[in-house]
Length: 309
Image (tube, rainbow, N blue to C red; front, side, top):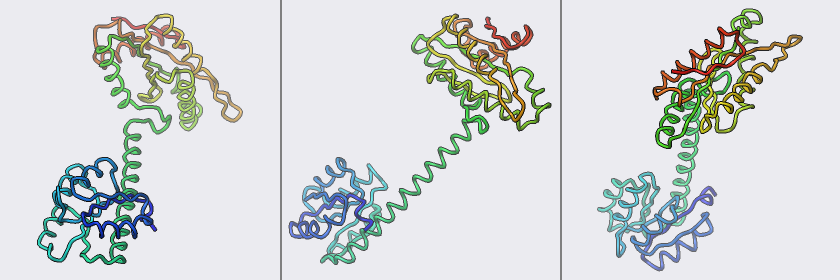
């Protein structure tokens, strides 16, 4: 039965009823938890986080309705079923207002009790399935909003978000970072000669190769067309950044075999070190690395240049 996948907390002060419920329900559920008053029931709810609660209304210490009210404050979606005597019908309206799922009149009818418990279990299962589907959909939307669909690299939106985090961390911890602006050389000629389909393969090939030579903590994004940005944190040594630039140039120049053709690309790089500028504005840092990249273009391409202010 579906009920076997769920935990059940039974809150009932009558010992005979509690004994009966345990006998008939313990084997039906994943875990059976007992409480003999509302105060103990609330404590066990906080500790065990049961899927379903089956509770009496009239109990010592803390009545069922007050217990449910406290439970709903913690988890408004908690599933609760009420056991009530016919004489307690005037309190059922209050129970409904608290959001109870159902109620079972005493003396208890086992078939009806199991039917309502299984119905509640199915509702939880359906809700959980919907929650999972919603979570998957949200993740898909987040990916669409933050990742480039062609290369699967972070896009410009994600890049700007990451830059804000890096700048904030740099100020807070007194650390440094460097921004690399990478632009493929003569990419328009590739598109014009081989077509956009091959051009897209080149971009995917470049993204894959860039990721392969960078550390796990480094950040690489495709910000537009044939332009990529790389953020290197916690190491601003000139010689280290030069080694990264050389690795990027080598990675980009790895030929892509397309049929009988072997297409090789090169790139021009502009590097902005956070210590070389007083600005902590993303646009200023971006423009500085962009200008340095254009210097690399003018000097003959397939090289790197450090930008300064």
